[in-house]
Length: 253
Ligand code: PGA
Image (tube, rainbow, N blue to C red; front, side, top):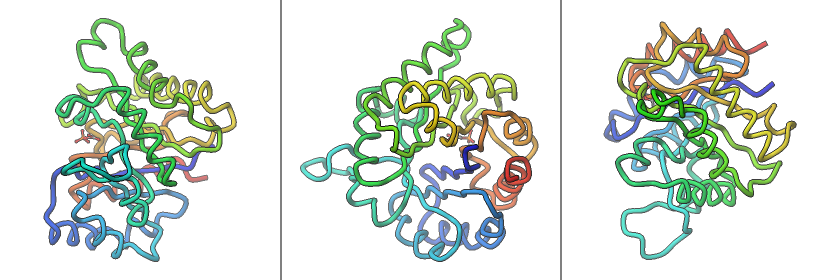
């Protein structure tokens, strides 16, 4: 079975001081959750501070994005080489990056490879927009996204896949448990296609999109949902701790 994992995507929220306060408010409780991987993804400028705070605890740190080149004339960008000493994970291909900043499947694929080459674990985000779901194309869209991102990835490379239907992100319109299971199951099959059955079994597959303490159980109660990628609720310590605790209760044997 894949290790359960809950990741906090703080997006473009928290100053350095606020980031520090958020970590301090939740790190004791999160650190006590045995058997669960918790990944905090603050903005780049807070990565070093957050990494310092959680050092020696069970908590992990992740970045929210990276560039695929390691250095050069790419004003404003941050590379895998710069991140590798600060964090262990990196979110790649979040729908906000795809929609607001024009990231294509090809760019996402290059980012996944750059992360892996630097020993970072990519949290690959995939998901359909509302129109695609209404047209019955969700499976096709997610299949294309996962195949493109994992093409050429080795069976030994560690990845995390987050299925995040775009219509559910930040809207309060969460997918139901059965839909999340269907799409997370698909994601696992696609990981098996790219990296083999053995790797797929151990790859954490997450659901994301309006996850909160009231709906988390319907996701992590499903066979193929190993955890969650949490946006809005990750900025509220009580809520994020409750989500992490429910995940640990459901999935840690
Ligand atoms: P949300 O965001 O939990 O606020 O819907 C999830 C995400 O964007 O990863």
